Image 1: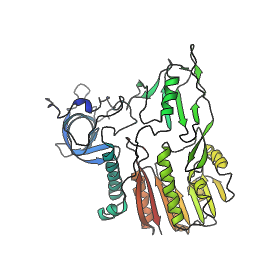
Image 2: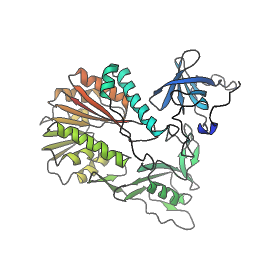
Image 3: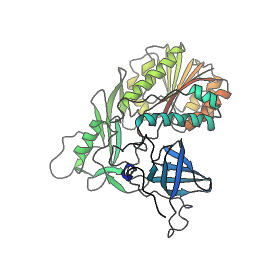
Image 4: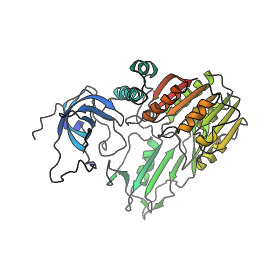
Amino acid sequence: MTIPTPAIPASVVPEPVPAARSRKAKRDVNRPLEPIEVTLTGFASGGKAVGHAPDGRVVFVEYAIPGERVIAEVTDDRPSYIEATAVLVLEASEDRVEPACQYFGKCGGCQLQHIAYRRQLELKADVVRDQLHRIGKFSSEEVAELVRPMLGMDEPWGYRNHNRFTVRRDGQIGFMQRGTHRFMRVEECLIAHPRVNEVLQAAQDHTMQARQLSVRVGVHTDEEMVQPRLQWRPGPKPKLASGQTHYSERLNGVDYRVSGPAFFQVNTLQAERLVALVVQHVLDADAKVVVDAYAGVGTFAAQLAGSVEHVVTIEESAAAGDDAEVNLAPFTNVTRIVGKVEHTLPGMTPDPDVVVIDPPRSGLFPGVVDAILESAARRVVYVSCDPGTLARDLRMFVDGGFAIGEVQPVDMFPHTQHIENVTVLDR
């Protein structure tokens, strides 16, 4: 197959790492699948551009942008769709930029560095609209009215306060290559906070008897947690403390203790914006009793306790619960409940005025939605990290008598496919 010369340098497309193909795509290992030419017309969850193959099937293409025409290597050939990776750009989008990171395309951490940041925000907001329309069955007019422009960052680099690295027996530190089990040494992660990179560089080639390295830093406190406790190879020893069991971070003036197993937002600056948005939605409802479901280390509860009469937190993680006990100790108007939300929320007394929910990527169990519908809650503030499960759950709330006030996307993870949303619903 003759591949035309691309309209822009091929270096703008990251060098592809062979991805694991499905059994269907491996029909004959001695006969590789032919690359295909695709014109991209849309953008889908997962950070992939969308087009159609000559036979009419939908094609999802990594490292492409709507409006482009590319040559794509097929990585998964299914009866109803094709997965592919752009290897040459024939007609480039004006939004295509040179990826800043030397590992882009090999590392699986970022998917969107080839797209100008302004355009990333627009495309991610489009994904939210598409999921609400297709999965939530909301009309195009409703979606256009409800979804706000995404809140981006002024500086979308060096934001990530938590990175987990792979460590080899010889002391090299890096990541696993995208879609493989092959190790890739890394000297710097451009989306990581500078202090994370300092720890990486200090430990590189010096560790022994460790398989992973987790680095978490307090952006506003200058504290850090490096796990596990590192043992050093013979030779000069890095001046690096490790083995801490917890560290602290500060959001909007409120301090939090965070332990190793506990979840905490990886983007401190955007977390402050997200938390402030949630708090404002709660206060606008003139709430007296607020339930903070999936409360974690008490992120929202600690921000709300000084402004409402009573906060009830629900969290099943023991590690997060230990942190929450410390973080919420100054507040006498907070009641902590340990358990699953679907088991503890139904029949809760007193009834909440507002429920804040921040579930895992899988979204809400139907029992949680039912419990809120059966409660006296007037408002729900839903923090979601997955537009698809958000759309599914919002449909259940609306069918149960709630109305969506707004869906506000927040870019917690620049240059990646991930999308956070804050949605407010009123009965």
